[in-house]
Image (cartoon, rainbow, N blue to C red; front, side):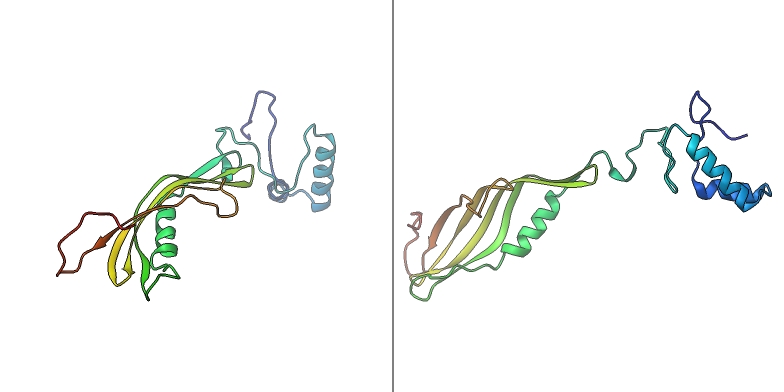
Length: 179
């Protein structure tokens, strides 16, 4: 005897399983097809060939209703790959400035799935290290992107930078920030 799924003793079955059971009980294929059609016509619910029954445990099958995945570790790797090595152009006196590393990346980054639709959301605070040579002096510092988000349009990100000139060995040290 088949187990019932609810108090009305309804049974959920795919057409494939129904036809397989019909063959096992020696029911002719034409009779089985006619019986399937009769049951389908009389059903209060639409029978869809190959459809699965609702789950008794109410599990979120195939992440249909809602799922969320944390992407912050991936963002750190991706930003490092994209930004480390980027050089500034137009530095005076044949100078150069290059991003040397991702110092920190904090905030939230996730991809959610709601009924088959992907939703990407991120709000990051990114801090990069840079170094270079300007006016024949070595310089280094940080570049801060305090609000990297999907809400920012046209790449209009706020960027703050700070730099310190590294004095040559024959000059006394100075803690004055690079202008």
